[in-house]
Every structure is written in C-alpha cells, then in structure tokens.
Image: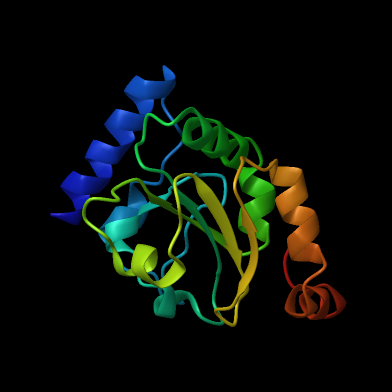
Length: 161
C-alpha cells in the first residue's frame, strides 16, 4: 500500500508542478537501515502518514514540510527549493517528509502541530531546530545544519558533505 501512496504523491507533484521530480523508486522497496544505500542524487520525500520521526533519531535530519494542500504555492515552491539542492542536503543526512493531509493528522503532524504551511528542521537527536512559516532556500537550510553541534562534529571527523 505504501508504494501506491508514494507513487500517487509523485504523480500529483508532477502534475502540479509540470515537472517530474527525481524520486528514488529503489527506496520504496526496503525500509531505511544501515544496509540499504539510497542514491543521494535522487529526491524522495516521504509522505507524512508513512513517517516515524523516532526512526530517524541519530541517523537522519528530518526536514518536515507541512501544508494544508499539495497545491499550496508555498509547498510547491519549498519542494522545488529542496529538490534543487538535494545532493548537498543528502550529504548532510537530510530526509524530507511532506505532509499535506491536515484532515487525517499523522503522528508527525500531531507531534509538531503546524498551522498552514510550515517548514520544520530537526536535529539528529530528534529536537526541533528551526520553524519557518514561509519557504526557505536550500542554501539557508544547509547553513543552519552546518551550525548544529552534531554536524560540526561530523565535519571535524570527516563525515559527509
């Protein structure tokens, strides 16, 4: 069932923007773990109803994009901005979660409680780092990540990006 939802999200996003986003179909075939490499060049947002924030603690930095509809211009712009910088964001262990279903609140939506459009950047330890009510450029997101203590330690140790 998750394959159908993800493919529906892909088709809707493609129809909405007029472009087909680069999406990782291979990511659909296995759950995220240490043995499942995901091509960092492929942009694959996870639908909010499939995301479990606890799954990413100490592994990934969730960037959660909320909107009341996938047709929200701010949502469409934010997804484009993230896709434009995806290889650099992936190098920083970012995972994008897109939640556009306020009528069916996901666990992510219940935990983070957004109002309308919202961008939430989280740390690897599961804490909210930044909330933005408007789309934010990928470069600004990367700067915010690079200032995080865990990321600075990763840079010192030569891990990633």
